[in-house]
Image (cartoon, rainbow, N blue to C red; front, side):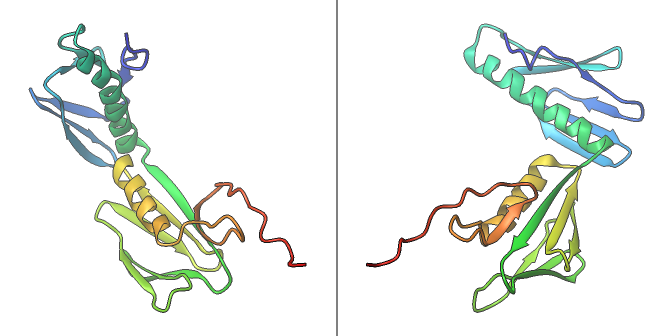
Length: 182
């Protein structure tokens, strides 16, 4: 039995769901999200809650998907009601992040050229140039995570000086450098 899959998903007021044989659509105050559902998973609405169950509880693959789809659908409900945010920080002398145009970031990260990154549709970016920080927000948790990981991959934090792009609150373990030559 899946401990996560057994938990029902409470639908807040103002959130509506449309369930078909192979997809689910969740509408809320912040927007609409939809996802296809695997044929071995069944989603039902009962008394203001969504219940996810495997069609064949004996199949190991269906049991594996049970908790996954419960988490994915719960993230959809949370996204259309509250949304998600991630903050990235740039640390390095002379390195900066600027908003060139709405939805276009200009990253100066110590390379011979600036990196121009277009933020995908569905994600909004708020840049604080003085603090070297960008706050990304979206209703789609997967798209937000992929976007922030792509930006971080341009210059991940290195372990010797700690320079790079990191998530807010991320701790980078420092390594000791070379010892002096004798």
